[in-house]
Amino acid sequence: MTVAAIIVAAGRGTRAGGDRPKQWQPIAGRRVLDWTIECFTAIDDISSIVVALHPDDMDLLPPSGRVATVPGGATRAGSVRNALTHLAARAQAPEYVLIHDAARCTVPGEVIHRVLSALRDKGAVAAAPALAVTDALWRGEDGAVSGTQDRTGLFRAQTPQGFVFGAIMQAHEAHSGDAADDVEVARAAGLPVRIVEGSEANLKITTPGDFARAETYLRGSMDIRTGTGFDVHRFGPGDHVMLCGVAVPHDRGFRAHSDGDVAMHALSDAIYGALAEGDIGQHFPPSDPQWKGAESRVFLRHACDLAAGQGCAISNVDITLICERPKIGPHAQAMRAALSGIMGLAVDRISVKATTSEQLGFTGRGEGIAAQAVACLVKP
Image (cartoon, rainbow, N blue to C red; front, side, top):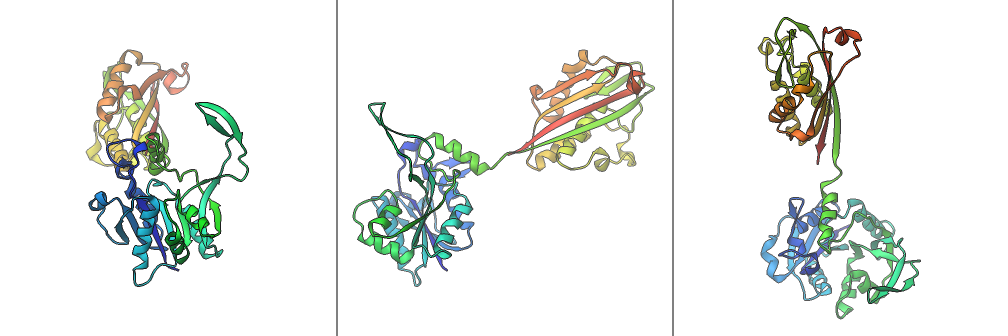
């Protein structure tokens, strides 16, 4: 089975707004047409792709690989005929052809496969994706409802529309004038068209608001990850404790391999946890003498850099310190500012708070401090 695809991209698309035709406008880091072409190059069954371009746009898409270009016509139907003629002139014309609108840059692969299956496995001469109309339909006049329309048997047409190549070639040669799509041309020639299931994701960019909708599909679903961390340090000799990067005066210090910043340790572990990357001990073994007395900002910065390296942005963090003394409230804002500087995260995305354990347990007896942290990471 040989399959070719035609992408119609010769229109001007004025309703979409912008300073250029919609197929050339950027979306999610690439041009609309580039995304559309990728939808078809991802299908192994498609051996060649012909893009019909406006004559003024031919230099905007150099032919490469499976992709060739032809000048479009004055109408959509004319553009399709030019592309069909290009395919027919080859040494071996394709057995099937898919005809698709460039403005549908989010067509899922399964929709393309359903059209191909209808042609190949079920023997259809023509097949096209569509969605049944589920909304109530009105007729309107002068901005007011003038009547209703029965929606029974009505469908919203989509592309790609697939055909036996010879049949649609003959249909276009016999068709005069323009057509809304190739199903109209096929039906005018008496070809039966099988409906296959379309997709809500297969939207057509028509107005400015459609770009934002399409971008949500192109970027994919957001990957949100949450991690938690918990750490404890006992008091020892000293006159201050390090908490969230701030030296807090106290009549004791921490007994710890590093500077003992229990809050930053918990927060680092929360980030490592969200990434499924273990904990501080795996990245900075306490048995390694080089980390003796190290500032905990080193650990936290490493966790943040690891997240960034995996394409994750830290959305927000929340730290709770559990202790009777010292009092955390007077230092909370300084702690948030210190963490902001280390993490490169806005202060309003950093929460630092404290609670007591009602004089219960080791924290209640004033033997040390515990901290727990939550980190939320987002990967677009």
